[in-house]
Image (cartoon, rainbow, N blue to C red; front, side):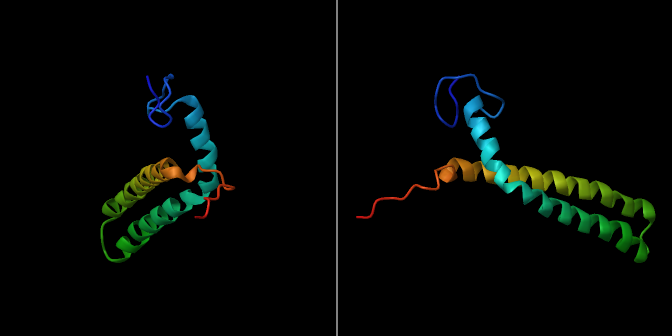
Amino acid sequence: MACARCGQDRETNAAGWCADCDRAFDGWSRQYASDILYAVFAAGLIVMFAGVGLPLLGVPWLVSATGIFAGFGTIIGFHRWNRNRRRRQFLAGAAMPRAYLPEKP
């Protein structure tokens, strides 16, 4: 099957990429390992509001405990959104070498 990124006829993974393209994306994406911080901070705020803020407002603890699931869903949602965003960024040509300079007319 042809690779979705490079177009060579190789064995592909579930994403449709060959092993070389997947390895290149993995190395490139490690530059952005701090992306998880946004997901964790957002989930922490949701859990803090639901776990601490809602009981102070008089909401039963069982309802506020669902904030933990909402925080976990936030982490998953941010991770998927960010993974797709970085993959599109990689496919758009961000994998071009840094020394590449277009010729001036």
